[in-house]
Amino acid sequence: MTVKADTRLRRLPERGSKDIRLAHKIIDESRICHVGFTLDEQPYVVPMALGRNGDRILLHGSVVSRLMTNLAEGLPCCVTITHLDGLVLARSSFNSSMNYRSLMVFGAATLVTDPEEKKRGLDILVEHLAPGRLAELRPSTRKELSATTLLALPLETFSIKNRSGPPGDAKRDLDTPIWAGVIPLSLEPGQPQPAPDMPDDIALPAYLHSSR
Image (cartoon, rainbow, N blue to C red; front, side, top):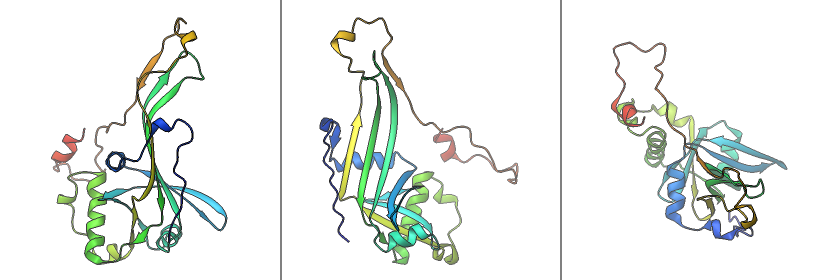
């Protein structure tokens, strides 16, 4: 199914980009996306984990999921990712803003049916969420793989918008005695919390030390 989407930025077009490498970076630094679609005239937006295989976004879910079934059948969707990098505090509310990086990907996902490709895709998702984790996990069973749907959405029609830097105050406000600047924001991993039923002699793996 061909999906036509108008990705032109009409407001502040200088913040837009079509750089596929920047799109990759936005995806690779995210652990969650939001998938928007319309089903039976009702709009939905669903948060989902994601990964990337080259120029394709990978999504997964249960084979009995209505969302996955409809997406696999070619239902048009829009996948969005946003990184909030800072609060931009100007000397007026009108010129206050946020520093951010956002990506919108439009298209129709395809079902990954080849068993080896599907296994590789699910491995990519595991490594994306917790790099280093895959090496110590037991292999997925045939039953588990059969119970999981893997979809691939091509990075063909997309739009990037981002802002960085200090406030852009109006000249008439520059002498106002009000603090102005940027409050940086970032998402940082916390202290790993072991499962309550895990034996005490299992040490924290090295990849979790390096992620902190």
